[in-house]
Length: 453
Image 1: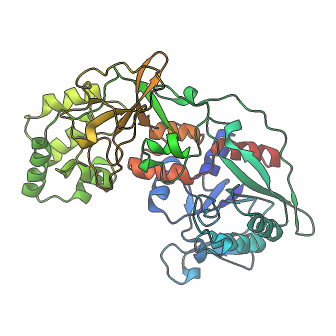
Image 2 (image 1 turned 135 degrees about the vertical axis):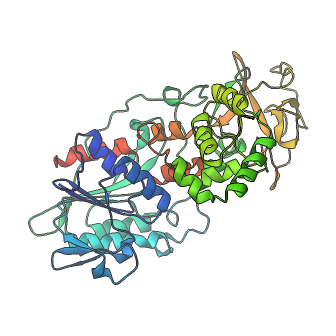
Image 3 (image 1 turned 180 degrees about the vertical axis):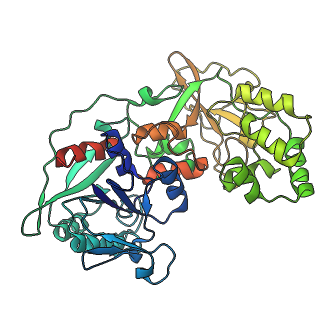
């Protein structure tokens, strides 16, 4: 089997095939992927090392029953080639210019969503046995009609919520090649909701809605007012008595790392390669500002060996490791200082913020407010755990709760990926990659309808 995936992202299509028992070995079964995001490619290759990366879609040319590609921007035919006998073409062109989420959207005329025509170009040249194309359901009727006319089939609307705990409505154009070279629509059979709710996929804590809002590429910027006011970027709650991850290891440790790195004349790139981590993650261990981070113990031991560290911080790092959980690596352990007063259910109008607790010394970004009061003024440059919006507490019938955003593993579950599928890159890149991806279980369901296996 040969699959060509355009705008491949993190190979959700390949994972769907794997779930169905098809492994791509690069010989009998080959998965070709066109992708330009280096972090997405890093995730793909970590999970599917036999993937044949083709580079930019604009560098793919189809001639004389061959597909020519080039990853290095040299003349195209010097890059490589393979026969164009593709069984399935799959792809989801960028949706930014089509989505209702973007103001003044330009539709298919936009610089990113116009890449749809690259998909069409390759579809018409390659003529695969089947094709799948995905995009947002919120596009204009005009753009939907243009896409349908170009592809020759009408789309079907599928909500990922039937398969996962995420509300994610998408249009899927699914075609089967006929003898005359044209395509007919593949009908997708009735989908029964599997009944998976947000609570089912949480590592801990409690969901206050059954299904999450759609996961976006900018989820890492999630702040409290997003899910409450804007109904986007879902967050979950956890009991007040849970440990809030505040780092106990002082800045002296990070300062010591910086000094040892300088003395040993070792670069961040060399350290990242030695530890097997992205540079973007390693860099946080060598910072003294709000973005500083403490490495987990297994990485600390590698740093210790490479930088010839002494034993001064061993006990502190070990203690931090014991207390570690899902929260950001520089937000470790220890309880909230002081109790929160019980809030009543009175309907008395409140015209000012109600401060009910704090983290650490209670700096502006570490103050906790009740959702029953007014929001504090939003800051563009705030620091601390509640940077820009402060921290808020939600009151549920059985106790007091704090709010957190979804963990990358939970986002993987919302998109149908195995746990830690994206852990080859930083959390920011994990959120971005997952927000841009297909939902694996939806693609898996569509593939079953093709009778291609």
